[in-house]
Image 1 (cartoon, one colour):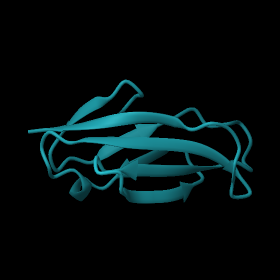
Image 2: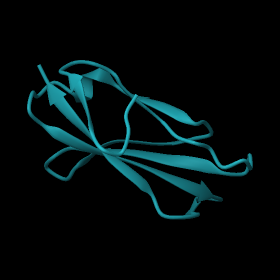
Image 3: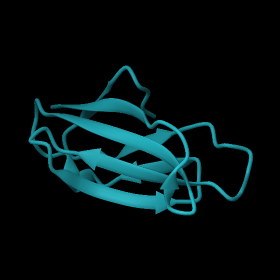
Length: 90
């Protein structure tokens, strides 16, 4: 499980993140993974308090990816995003 300070994973490993959900079922969460080159490589809107980024995203050792979770209500951002890092090691 990852936190905002940045966590290390092994190359080819699934990266799981979790957060404290807003206690209102109307909220969804936009989850985004950004490659070190700035390209968004995975994005989803989920009705959950956890998400797993696919292992095939993390094949390059030494790269640091950025993840972002943003609560949304009716497709509009509801508050600032929570961000963190995933550091890929071998």
